[in-house]
Length: 149
Image 1 (cartoon, helix red, strand yellow):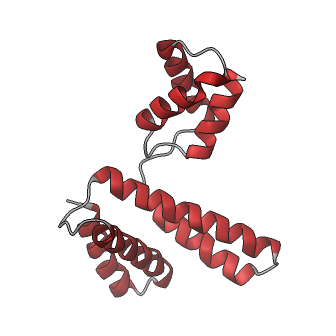
Image 2 (image 1 turned 90 degrees about the horizontal axis):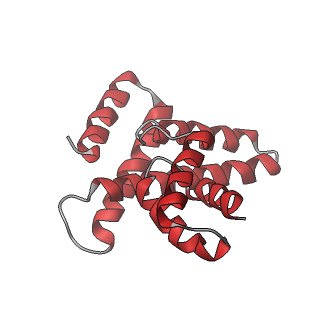
């Protein structure tokens, strides 16, 4: 079952349960998926990788918005963003912690023969492919910089 079908079923369940928090997050996911389908080409289904990228983008947007609301002392809006972020994250693959990311990046550095910051682009490309959907790009970048720097 595709993510879109799962989301549609979960929307129905959330409506029946009158779970407004979950419903808000699910509707955001559905909207983003529909937008991704119509954005570039008119396709019936988008790939799983694209779905994961869409969800990661939504989580990143929610984190950034929550940070802004927190600095402006808007706890009401901050709470909404955090709630939606949690709903969206539930549909992402399990995220790796920093030590797991470091272990994988060390393997990549050893395999690619990278030795300095000049090789960062090559290592980042390989790391992003291997860790797609399992780790945030900024965390991967921090780990690569620490290992090559």
